[in-house]
Length: 292
Image (cartoon, rainbow, N blue to C red; front, side):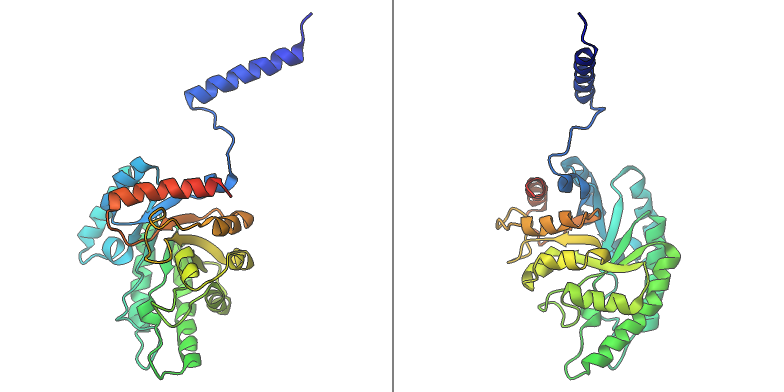
C-alpha cells in the first residue's frame, strides 16, 4: 500500500538535497546574525579583488581619495572601477581637521560645499552612506565654551542634513573615543546631535572599537537601536583586526542581533600585514557572529 505523505516527504528531501548540491537552495542559517551583516573593510579600492575573493561584501573608501580626488578625471576613473568589482557601501574621512565646525573660526560654507559634492558623487556610485566622524574638525579648542561649540556644530548639521536628503545618501554621525577628539564621544552624545537635527537622512554610526575604548556597554546599542545605520569594528588595545589580540566581540554582536540590525559592518583597523590580517579578520568575525 502506498503512503503518499511518506513518498512526498522522501521526494521533497531528495529534491532539496539535489538543489543544495547544485547551489540553488540555501541551507538554513546557523545564526540569523551571521547572514544579516554585510561585511566590508575600510581600504583603498585596489584591494577590492582580494576582499571579494575572501568573501567580503563591500569596500569602505575614503571621501578624499575616492570621491573628491584632485582631478575630476580621477573620480571618473574611480567610478568606472565599480562596474565589475565590489560595491563601495560607505566612506570615511568626510572632511579634514583644517575645516573647523566649531571654535572661534569656523569653515561651515567650505564644509557644506565639500559635503554637497561628496554626497552627490556617493549617490552616483550607488553608495548608502558617508560616515560623519571628522574628529579634528569638531574638536573643541582649549578654553572655548562647550555649549557654544555644540550650538555651532548643530547649526552646521542642520544645513548638512538636507544635502544628504537631496542626494539620498545617509550621513552617519560617528562618536569617537576621547583619545581622538573631545566632542561626541558616545552613542548618547551622537544621538543628542541627531535629535537636535531631526532629519531621517541623519543617523548614527556605531563603532565597536570606540565603544570599547570608552567602556561603552553593548546595551547602548539596544538603547539607541532606531538610529544605527552602520558599524565599524577593531580590537581595543591597538585597533588591530579581529583575531590579532583575540578580542571577544560577541556581547556587541548579541546586541546587534537583538535589534535586528541589517546594516554593514566594516573593519577599520591598523594593519601590519593587510593581506594576512584581513583574511583572519573575516574568519574570526564569521565565527563569532555564528556563535551569538
